[in-house]
Length: 115
Length: 113
Image (tube, rainbow over all chains, first blue to last red; front, side, top):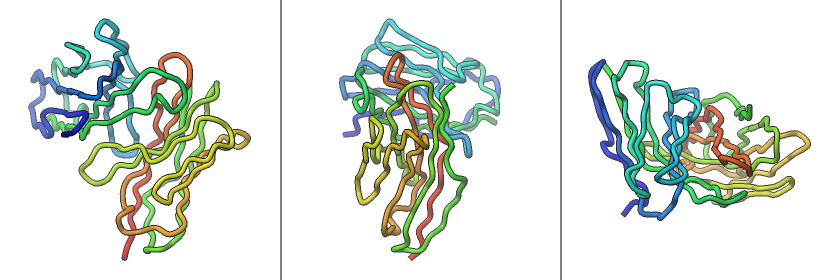
């Protein structure tokens, strides 16, 4: 079984709808991240969490919110989806630590289309 | 802030050709450097990493050397295969504080038989 899972894998929604993307991990990592990937822009950090009580904004948090329900679960919400939020969304996890220990492990991604 | 710049893609090569994908970075501290690979329809996988100057990361025939003097971490492979076709991302992570990953824009590589 995959260590980092994301649901749904694909989603088409309409402008103004609320949508939640979910991420679960079995790696036992404390740190979890949400990124979005756009063609030609690489991955950009939306939010990150270092434990259940710690939530931090990333580079592009406007229009998004997150919830860390448990160590293993980190959800991303779009309260009112808009077309420019159409993208590929990735969840990732890592352990705290210096150097190579902060390798991040990625889920398979959720492709979101907002019409 | 910290940033990563990769060579523009897409890159198309023939099988067994030599590959170089350039990556340069800007960082205030001494970051760790990574190459991630994304195969079609999949998430990102760590390909190789280096944590200090002059370290060489290697995996699956790919290599990259952490060059502090030129702030570079170029990816190389001596003989590419069709199965290497993917998108490659260079990234850095600062070793202090939040240890967030900063990614380059990605380079799409296609290998023709």
